[in-house]
Length: 396
Ligand code: LMR
Image (cartoon, rainbow, N blue to C red; front, side, top):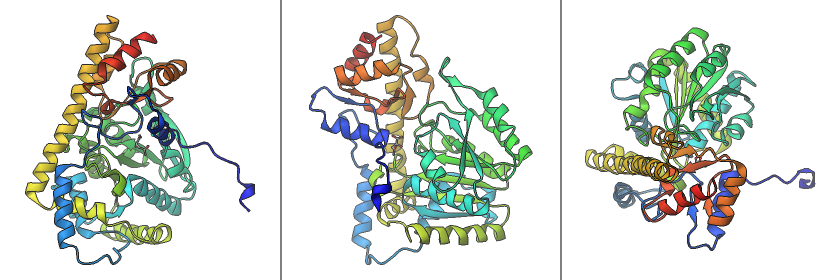
């Protein structure tokens, strides 16, 4: 029967990761997949994760199933991290949440939930957005639309155009926003812009859906939740898909959280019953290990402090690299063409070079970046930054 299926091209991010692995060039540089790296190019397990894992393994007495929503203590801790301690939505029991297999699991369960409430609902995503948003949301039945976001000329935000488009979105449809560290552009909304979008959501009645996969990688753990917390206060309904891949470094453990804010506690209960039914029909219940580690960290003040310090170190390293990279390119070129890199947030920025130059970087220098010119800034380090800058300048 499968002869009816056409072959499909591989995922661009994952296939670039595989091509990099195969490349025998000792000077190769991976600026592709969004994985944090240290100065030696490694992605080590955080010390707080090692400690929490040990503690959890020593105390674990069963491998029996979790429930479909996952671990209740994990969900409570994640809600606190997303919405803060003084959140109105949590205290009114308007939030329900589920531990999911990564941020992807949260996005997919959310999309299925929306599609049950309104089949084929339209969801506006930024242009550009993370490429996997399209299958994760679209394959669940949602209709993908785009709103202007990244301005290729200025490497900044097309905020006025974005607002003009969003002013046409109405009740029963959704707008996907990146909570912080926009993937792929690194361009985030400032506080005033978040407030304007929140006001528009209230006025038009559309439902905001926030994907926050990099909380703590932008300005700070609390600061990066500004948009989530603002929306939770302003709008009656909100979806939040969160990931623990980057900020806890738990990529392969697949742990994330879907939190849905409803207008009241009774509506939240109904939403939860639907969410659990969807989860049961897709993967039954989430894997346990990653959530157990996160829960152990977030419920222990010493481990929490250790995690916050490690997270801050990752963030500061990336911000330091942004400065160094901007400076090194500026010195070589004698202009400020790449100064925008310093102003952007999180792991990603577009270099803004053309396709031939991207191929040249890959083939002549073994420097791997996405075809869109997105780079993972964390892939730079003290051993390769000069090599990368020289290469970029040489293909100018
Ligand atoms: C990325 O954008 O590179 C990461 O989120 C990894 C992925 O799954 O695409």
